[in-house]
Image (cartoon, rainbow, N blue to C red; front, side, top):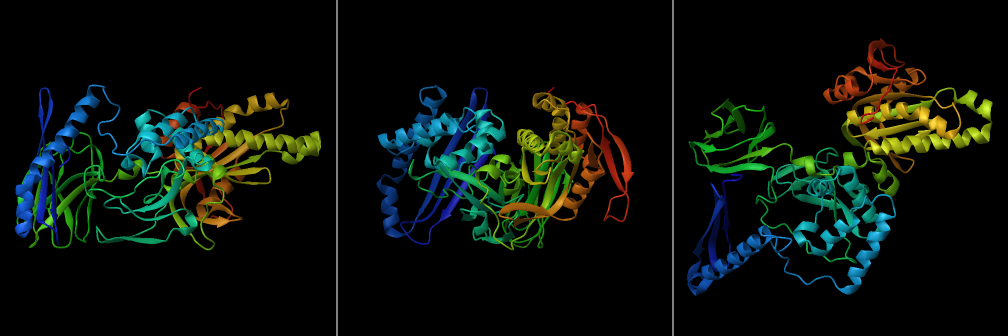
Amino acid sequence: MTDRWFRHERRFSRGPLASLIATAELRPTERGTICRYTMDAEPSGLIGRLVLAGGFFSTAEKGFNRLIDGVRAHLAGQRPVAYEPARPPLDTARQQRLARLVETIETSGNGHGLAARLADLVRTGQDLDVERMRPRALARRWGVDERSAIELCLQAVRDGMLESRWDILCPRCRGAQLSATALDRLPTKAHCDSCNVGYDRDFAQNVELSFHPAPSVRPVTEGEFCLFGPMSTPHVLAQVRLEPGDQRSVPASLAAGPWRYRTLDPGDPADVTIGSGDGIPAVIVTASGVEAGLAGEAGSLSLENRDTRPRVVVVESRRWVEDALTAHRVTTMQAFRDLFAGDVLRPGDEVAIAQIALLFTDLSGSTALYERIGDAAAYRLVREHFAFLTRTIRAHDGAVVKTIGDAVMAAFAEPADAVRAAVAVQSAVQDFNRDQGTDGVAIKMGVHAGHCIAVTLNDRLDYFGTMVNLAARLQGLARSGEVLLSGSLAGDPKVAEVLAETVPGSNETVSVRGVERSVAVMRLAGPFTAQGD
């Protein structure tokens, strides 16, 4: 039970011990928290009894006391980490290599002043801290924006400080059951032996890009320690064994948001969404799975096992993927497209994308522009316009997928980011024209979000489907200087927040080529004010 107790039982098939049970109990006091840690061991035969009688527990106690002393020193500011790594420091050559890499990364434009902090983590972190680094978690720990931390790690791979791998995560224990160094080597399915569950590859949910030090910088011993421990499964609030017919209530506090009730056995889970201040729905285990019952008193979780066999109930947050840099997220970032253009799906492989936002742009009156200023000058202006769009799209966590003539197709993981980017472009076009000494650039845009498929086309990751076609059609229906949003995208709550702060819109319906029914849209005609202006 999170923040209250943890019990871990190991049963051995061979060796001097038959079982070992470790229990940690936390009790809050006025001065802080008291932690009580106990160990229970059962010998397996004479050798086991001799081991336990020969100082097994006293040796363990000394080890725990050393750990406690380290925590006290850390809290007193006497050492940077609570648990000092039991390994020698990096040799001089590796230290010098790290220093050179810091300079290289910072000169790339993707370091954001963070390369030295990353190098310090690589140099001093324990193996567990660096064998699977997650840039979104680093961003939260360092107090920086996620894009900066992600771009830092991507650049560190390019320059040789880090290596990356694609992991297919188990939806239950979050372990990386299958890994690959490139997208085209990822299988479409995986199986977790520990959880006894099979699952499909899902770019938005369980395919993660993680990072670890390059061996030339620091060798790392990889391994999963205490597979179901609190550090490995921070999304699990409770994991409780219930005997047949058991009914009990346990103290619990579930934050507002989506949660899942399940058992360690195959069977249907129960998904619940808890509002702020709501009671917690009861957990009811049946022979076929888990059900959510009526909400009980605040601060209490009711558990009941109606099955005829013992079951282990798991209550977990469905927000566990928030720290994962999913394939869906990173492939819609400009830095990934720039630095890892060759990391694509194998030919013929198709990946379903449940939700993506696409932005299409085009120059208004480009033919007249070429005739007015000449081919060479117009070509230079178009290239500068591409650079302007790319900078703006990158600044709003998107990526240019491709250019088509004078047009751009860009992808975003979040619909609100696509709208922010579109508004930012239109609000800055006048400044762009002034800097270029022209008034000839006017842009029209279309934005839509929905499901599609990702494929490799012309050696790059591309998107296909009905929603892609609709986004392109909306751009074609926009007038010069406008942004046309699909009605479904405009109705997104986060998009509505962006529009309320940036630009008024008008709702209408339009006829779209290739679509039988009229399509609801929102037309943004300005004036445009980028968020933060």
